[in-house]
Length: 95
Image (cartoon, rainbow, N blue to C red; front, side, top):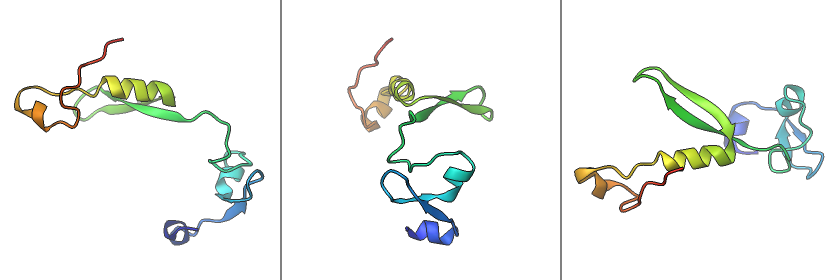
């Protein structure tokens, strides 16, 4: 059990597949019998949607789609900031 878990006073039960610790809330609230590592449920991801400077949203989509959209939105920049970006020289990919 990690320090974070101890500080939060979380209760744990054993995963039915691997026997490792998993939060009891995962079973009670969501009905899962296995831990995240043993789960067969597809992972999800988030895509940031900017409607206004103070009105942003997150759209929940499949993990693969989220990675693709986030990769496509990673612009290299322009002018002087082009040299400061981690993806210097990377070309934009189009659908």
